[in-house]
Each structure stands twice: as structure tokens, then as C-alpha cells.
Length: 304
Image (cartoon, rainbow, N blue to C red):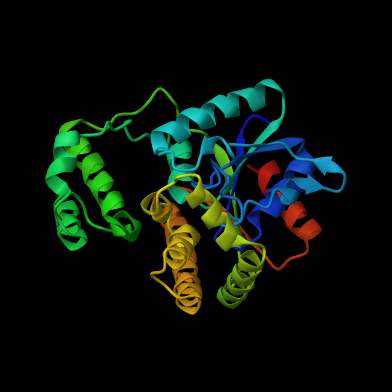
């Protein structure tokens, strides 16, 4: 099969485990669509559970995980280039490519065939923005676009980069890259809100027990700045704030838990919006037994 299979769902839905089992049945390879799992050393905080890629005694090949050093800046432009390189390689081996992740922008940009230009840094613009407060930067950004994505204004560094991109786009026409749209059967893993909340909370406790704080300390010891880690959001933002003494452990846990729940809601909002943008998502109940989910998925794929 040459068509791409796409597996998406919110955090804690079990999409990676499902994708690995589907890949096992279809002799497939998985292409990650996770904007943070690309970084080496950011393992616990990103939920990089590589054991999920083992089904029985079979290792499922995965791609676009651990491809950059923590602290590097990785753009949508970079992702599309890396995706298409891997996608062609998988097809050349007569394997089935399965795109799996929760970063809706990555998924949609690949399927649509559009790209954001590789926006260069603008030192003069950055210098003019640096003295401004985060609130002032948000106001500047709002002049370019409606602020749907609150992560753009999480930190001054993010806000300045978002303004830099928006300014560049306002002066250069957005264009299609020579990457065509890709046909794909899209399968979503749907987990009910209460189950999702419980899984997020228990998983957060587990990751902290497994050493997520030590992981952040290790990254800081590698001379990655606190601001760079905060830039990555969620676990790295709040655990870093705890490590540098700005949040107590209880404050960190409480605020992080709320932020992950909010993030999962935003993911579902994005996925629901995909329907309005012309995509069909075949939803599977996360609580179904794995074999039943796989059989239903194979039915979607065969009828596509």
C-alpha cells in the first residue's frame, strides 16, 4: 500500500501503542509527528516510551525521534523536509508508512502539502522587540494575526520568534513547496474526557517518580539555558521553573497537571477543526481491546 496511514489523538490516548500494533500487522514503519520527541535527552518529559515500539518479539522501526540535540531550534520547514525524506525511504523498501503523533500542525502541513518558509532570524527586529514586556509583545503579535495559539506568548523568546515569522510572512507570499499533498486514511484514537484526565494525572506522577526532575537538571548541566527549556513548554517549562526555584514542588505539580489537561483539550479542538478543513477522521474508542481496534482500523484502510 502506497497511501499513508495517519494515527492521531490527544496525549495519553494510547495512539503510539496502537500505531505500533498496526505497523506489526501491516509490515509498517512509524514516522513520529511529535514536536518534542525529536530531541535527544528529552525522554521522560516527552513520553518517549520507546518500549512501545516493540510488539511481542518484533521491533517496529520508527523515525524522526532523537534526531536533534536539545536546545536546537526545529521548524515546520525542517519537519516537512525530514518527513518526506523518510517517507520516500519507507516506500522504497515496500513498507507501509504510518504517521503517528499529536502535533496537529505537523500532521496537517504534511497532508496538505503546504509549508511555512524557512524564516531567517531578523536581528534588527529582535533588537527592537527585546525591551518590550510579554504583554506588549502579545499586542504586537495580535496586529499580525488572531492569537489562537497561546503557546506563542508563553515566553518572550517564543513571542519574539512568532512576531519574526509573522513579519516575514507579511512581506513574502506563502507558497506551496514542491511537496504535493499526500492522500491518507486518518484514524483517531478517542478517549473519553474522564479517562483522559485520570491517565494524564497518573502518568505525570509516574514520570516524576521515574526521574523527570533529574532529567531537567541533566539538561541544564549541559549548558542548555532555562529559557530554552521553558521554550519547549509543558513538563520542561514547569519542572525548570521548579528546579531554578521559582515554583515549589506542589506548585509545579498542580500547574503542570492543569497545563497538560488544557493541552489535551487544545489538541482535540485542532483535530475537530480538521473536519471543517476537509479531512475525514475515523475515530476509534480507546477503551476497545487492541485486537478489536486493529480489526476496525484495517476495515477503514481496506475501504479507503
